[in-house]
Length: 125
Image (tube, rainbow, N blue to C red):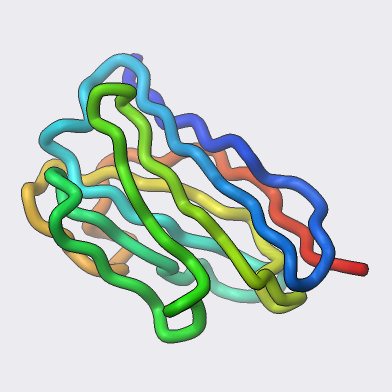
């Protein structure tokens, strides 16, 4: 069974950091570009960051540039999202998604083939 599983979410104070992980099972991520998305209550799902299959190309939403870093370790079949200087507006459920592509495909939700179940990130004092 092909699965993506996110982990690493939690409650953090403003200014704090979290690292999210997206682990794949049932398939290898070597040939997949990965995107991180988030959805806050009452809002649409939005793209946060994406990375090419090799890790050589990355993109970020303007709202997280300079604060979030996406990376991957294909040997561990895992993609990471390091989130620093967290703000209350970063509170959301974070999802990772995979698309069979060497290159990043941006933040169009319909482009992605597989999705994880999400992990909650809450930024609050």
